[in-house]
Image (tube, rainbow, N blue to C red):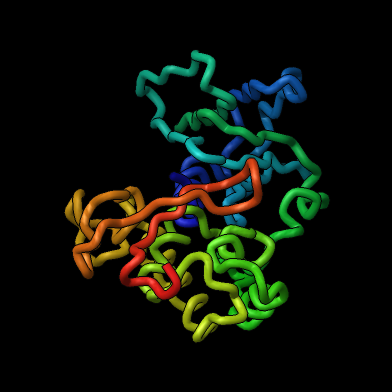
Length: 261
């Protein structure tokens, strides 16, 4: 599931493949951009912003995408057979040396670079960005003291980059219930520091690890492990929807280990 670390790696790969070269192909497969052609323009940079991706091209334009639940960008070297057909492909950007293909992108839009704030200006401090401000992140988290921690962590207006996996893993590691009001957090500063540490550790990994054990069946503490034994106490890991009605997300936790579970 794409979270801030995934988007950071994606931006790094796109930047390395496209930046500094002119586009030899531009195929954007969403109705609003069907006639848009950026061929000939140089790619300036690809940068992450929380869970958003910004590809800036000359002429003051930015291609903004979001990976959603299962989107991806894949980079292929020149000469490699690349399948750019199919209903899941939303974008194809190519230079003389590489082709980048965007799959299942729920958000794809072209903005004036000067107007990027319309897409990402609402975001809080980026855990992997140059604007990271731990004090501001804590301030935003505590601004709604009655809100459950799990919901507050997913709100990108508080701090940008956390998704459902890190939400569940952070709460487990700190032994707090995802339903604990943020006003009762023992240490909001410890929460934000641990969040940053985990994303920093995982931003260059293809497989996300929160347990320090990279073996495929040992990488995570609770996420995706409903009904299986807790790695700490042996009790069954629980799962329950959390969030506003109609927008609930599965939350994994150990009712024995986590306060108020």
